[in-house]
Image (tube, rainbow, N blue to C red):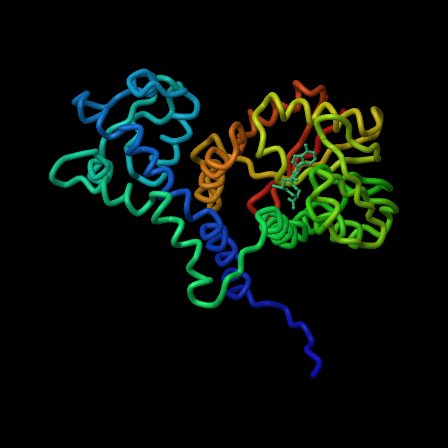
Length: 341
Ligand SMILES: C[S@@+](CC[C@H](N)C(=O)[O-])C[C@H]1O[C@@H](n2cnc3c(N)ncnc32)[C@H](O)[C@@H]1O
């Protein structure tokens, strides 16, 4: 039987939008318990309780012997989830001060009302490991390789976000005949892109050799193995989705410099598809939760990666020699950053 596609009603569209945001919360749902566990281990609530009054970020970082900017990101997340209160949010980073709430007192390591031991037990590697076996307990013994899991998860995101990139900024790809997807994974992103842009004659899906050797084969897309820290294949434009958030500023600048080398000085462009954290509370939106969770996931899964603010993007791009850039919000957790040599 043939199905004709009908226009979605406004209500259905809103429901789909809401579902996408909720979907991201499942993707990153672990971050909430992981950050609370981290707060208990660091003794944040204990430090403020012992201090007897709110503590500044500077005082907290020196008492807990923590890196100030990492601790700030942890506190930003905890404040967002109303676990601590931030007093005078508008002031300078080091002077921001944090107070206890009824919820943060549950995170004290000891005391009559502490729930810390329960949280530490449920979030321990031993207890978490059993969750990974839940589906095999119910059904069988599926145990796919981790690389395959990552490639499939990334392809899943490409199917979600690429249509949003195409819908909001197809014109960015005008005039591009060749494009290299740096850290392109299994090639899903590029195959969707060349399909939407028939004028692109050659797409290069560039990733580590063990990734491209199992990548998809599709028309006008060539899989090329290599290391983005060495050299990136030349093309009219480069695109990078969900790659730079895996790396700290120093590595990012090295990758970005190699991207700049790969594209023409006069009319080349770099298209970055990444989440951007709003620095201004007024600009926070329904995806702020998700972006902050993603930032925590980067802290946990990579040694130096992070979800950057607009200012942080400006810094790495300028350091890598890009003369200007602009940002287009799209209907996804990511935005599109266009940068020019
Ligand atoms: C988070 S995944 C993103 C995949 C894809 N861009 C997407 O969003 O669907 C990061 C990718 O960077 C690749 N990568 C990591 N180090 C690399 C390197 N040194 N050179 C090239 N690719 C690399 C990984 O293999 C992985 O496919």
